[in-house]
Image (cartoon, rainbow, N blue to C red; front, side):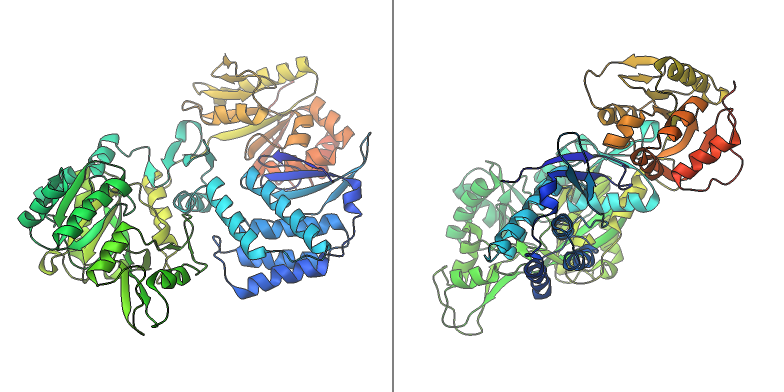
Length: 636
């Protein structure tokens, strides 16, 4: 059995300016038979052509096609395996640049290195594993269940990657050149660096009030606050038992909605109820599915479900939902028709699936009973059967929302206290004011999903990520600190002296400087011991320090070459004479490639007193031209 290991290279590295997962395999892998090449390419091509999948990145399909072409042209098994892994990565939502395997001689046994650009380490590992599995099975003449395996990969990617709401904001950050750092395995992300940093959690920002979140989760309080400022809301109250739910329904008037007090994602909600038996069943369903004992009964607001997104002082997007129905054929039961409906590849239970799975739960059965059906009924041909009234939000309707409704949405978010809010609105015609059509705002959500606005099934996507980013980083607010690399000698004494000279510059007066030496970290002259943490983790500690205004990285060329840069870029690199002599003489390609990938587009190179020939040698190693005269800011 072939074994391999992987090494994550976070940040710029010898292969790419992006993070890379480097797979190390025995050399015999490189020379394995490429017999599965044709069948593997055909398998993946036919899957693409069938189109029965959901992609989560606009570049996924194009990148996957390039990977298939690379497989067809592969002349060794390493290239075939890597191209197959690139296909898996692209289709999981992470398109990559095509890189080439490298055979490396080692003292024990030669190895082949396969570099795959990565977003999340575990996901790239899974892509390599699936690619190997596919090639092995096809090599044995077996069929490979690519549709099933893709679904597994897609769901796994949904588990380990940031969600679509976070990615919408981070895509906008990339466009504006704002750096970001994932702080946990969840959705907490730092935008910006050091003293300029902000944080987001999906569509919530660090300015989202905990009090506002608490208000939004209390539906009864939210409704009262909205009614007080003139926003249309349905009448209703909290209930304590099935009998009390029936009593409340008689008070507010039929039809009614029964739902958990803190309902999220439509859980436990039953709507347009008129009969006592339905209302009492709905009470139990609200407790079961909503996992609560707090249940509300309120008036049924007429119309379709809409989601209005408010960011700051404006409504930036709106989406309309659809009702889930099946069409009878006179042969199949409702349960069978729903099963067929759920075979649509766009349906799933992941956040990234455009459509959700239709479930015949208690709420659906209540809806069926109102139409005289059960799940085992066989509806006549062409009979439309309603399964769920509040289906997925599929259609963008931003441009047609009535201005008064948009203003009321902003007012509702303000009175709750949210900087970003998703309002659930029921309206027959969203282009008309709510009150005359008995429409209403039925819920205000903190941290709403951005997916319906970023990737609607119908209509135009809206730049909601940019709107939230603008809220966090308005105008041209600074988001970066300067990151400076110091390339000195490997001699610790000389290196310490060079760092001392650099820190003594007048430009640092009064500033809080973070320093990443070879151990621990320094912030404003104070040493902060972090134990045995890696170079990258220690760098992240400085980038996340809320007082740091600039950062100096003491470059360790050996670590640079082996593990990549600990920071996402270098805005300036200072070369001492000893360091330039030492590392140009050694001429390590991996180190110079990493350094080149780490340099920001407008990075400055500074040289201490040294011969012009040595400066030119440095530039030749970097394989780049440096315009202007090098700064001589390191005095002898």
